[in-house]
Image (cartoon, rainbow, N blue to C red; front, side, top):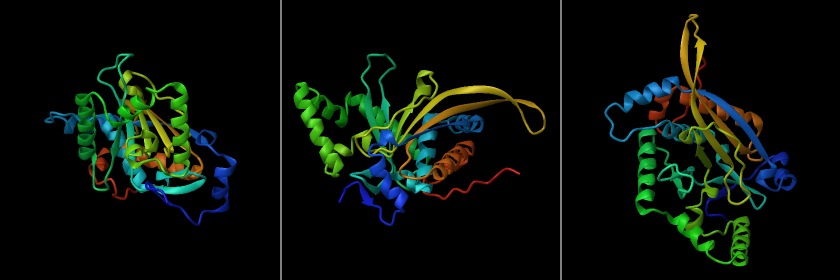
Length: 284
C-alpha cells in the first residue's frame, strides 16, 4: 500500500507484462517534440501583465497548460513501481531555480503541487512565492537532505542510496522525503528558453515515480502566409517530451500533446480551473 498512489486493477495483458519486459523507465522511453504557436499567448500575457507588478510568464503558462492537460488526460499521472501500476494521488510539477545564471550557481529544486480549482493566476503566484522563498532561505528541504547524504564517504552514500532504492521499490520512502523530491513528481520541467537554448531530449530516471520529463525551448520567429494570403510574423516555441511508454499507448500520448498545444494556442482557457473539461474545437 503506497502513500502516493492507488494501485490500478483490470489492466489488459499487454500493459500487465510491460514492467517485466521493460523493467526500468529508461528502457521504455518515448521521445517527442511539438512546435507551439505562442503568438496569441504572448499578446495575451502582455495584456494581463499591463498593470501587474509580478509578471506572469510563458513558463507559468506552460506549467498551467501541462497541469490542465493532465487533469483532462489522467493516464499521464500514472506511474509504475515494483512492477505495479499506480494512479498518483495528486498532480505535481517540478523544476530548478537559480539565483542567477552563472555556471557555478547552486541549483535549487522546487515542486509545485496543484489543486483542481487553480488557474493561471494561482499557478503563477505559487511559482513566484516558491522561488522567492527558496532564494531567501538560500536552500530548501531537498537540498538539505542531499547535502547530508553526500557528506559521507562514498561507501556510506552508496549504502544509503541502495537502501533508498529498496524502499522506493516497495513504496516505503518516507513521505517527508518523497514530497520534496522531483523524482516523485508528475512532470519534471526544464525551461531551457531562460538560458537562450532550444529544447532537447532529457532522460527519465529509474529512481522515483516520475513518468514525464519536458523541456521548453527559446521563443523563435518565422514569417508565414495567413488564410488571406498576407505575410505575418508568428512566434513559436518547441517543447520536448520524454515519457514512460508503459503508462499509456501512443495514441493517448499524441492526443494529450495535441490538447496541450490547443490550450496554449487558446490562452483564455488558462483562466479556467485546471479541472475544467477542455474540448478541442477544430477551425473551419
